[in-house]
Image (tube, rainbow, N blue to C red; front, top):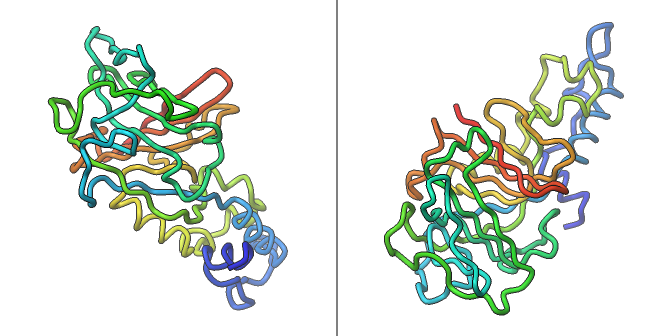
Length: 263
């Protein structure tokens, strides 16, 4: 399938004359609808989802993607400490060569580990440490092993195939002509196949790499930062983030940035 066919299938069928309302002083013109459709296609980004569990684990293999334990780190590296001086908890390890596609912002990262401070406030953007490694060579076990005492349960992570994701309306409204953004007709945006497919995946996959942040309370995008991944509340993974909330991780020239929201 060519890239144009991939985009068309992600968004569903092309708008027809029946879909496009006649122009008036208040309604978008046909050119406005065409521009909006083109902007939405241009905004699609590949996303990869991660499910926890679902495959037989190999507890001896730390050199893979894990939830809750079995991390690797550099020789001589210690488990990071939290605000109370106690060791942070390992939440997520991502081995990038397990992914079917290299996503924007992930270039040069062979392994990423995410540690959380259970006593800090995500809502203030604190309480985490992210470490990245350009190679797996020389990495050694760090922190608790499989099903050793810890805050989170131990699960291997299974990655999905890449699929296209469109931005939330907060990150899309200023990309389309004003008459379209103000129009009552909104199926062109809220009823696409891409949106339906991603919503279905997110209900069962608490880890999302690439794509767009799925904001709950509105856009909090840090200036000049790149969005890399998102982690959602999960009962299975014993990660409550307020009321069904999410944490979003960005990177800029100064390092990693966390944003969080919930219902």
